Image (cartoon, rainbow, N blue to C red; front, side, top):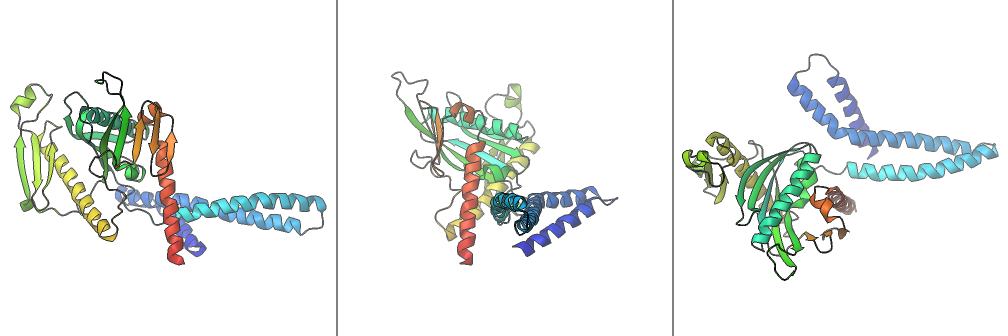
Length: 356
């Protein structure tokens, strides 16, 4: 491990030197800066480790001396350093785990109302607000690509592009069924109802990753539905694309420009085709695919939002927070961190098993 870390540190130093050169063009600067940023945490941890090991040796030298007071001080210092070195070693193991190549990607967030009718549509709007609030606090940008409103408000379906720094790395475990337990506003007897929404987090696909033959596309235009005033009645700007080989259908009507709607629809289609290919590949290896969304049934849930008790529970990490209002206001870091930590622990266990 440490010989590899020496090579990583050398590469980091080379990158710093290269970035300081005059006359570096913007494209090369961006490429080198991105690589440097990917190595920075690992190099910082390795340098911390080397400093602590040097301090350990100094403390050991103090213990072997003749001065009783210095020996006592050395023992105390060595005891503290042993704990710190162990912690940094564990951190290095995590940082050296294979990186998910999709972690830096933007994502397409899809929220769909499942079991529960109108109440599910209303809850999908609450989830949409939760994610967009978190995105805003993270400095990310959100664009609605498509939205179908429910009959009493909320969304039957809403699709959003979220762009920013390492979006997929933070949101990738959110795919699945989100269950809500609360008293609907239409409930006369105060009974708690259970509804569900499905969430899909799909990494944005680059054009080079998915090659789409134009002959495989059936593209139609139509007038946008919903709010929009005179524009809705006069302009055929909405786009519907059918990918004939797979049957995937994408619609986009959020923009007034037909050209922009077509570009956005192609972005969604490309991402869905990549996700489909990756899902089929993963399913061939294991039926227990982490990112499977499910049918929207109440029983297929990754998380429960219980309004009477004011709690949110993630069933994969058995974590319950009694902070439902804050959570739905976009303060979702604690559960995201717990999911990432569990994933890292599973990866470490697999690495250990592979070496055994």
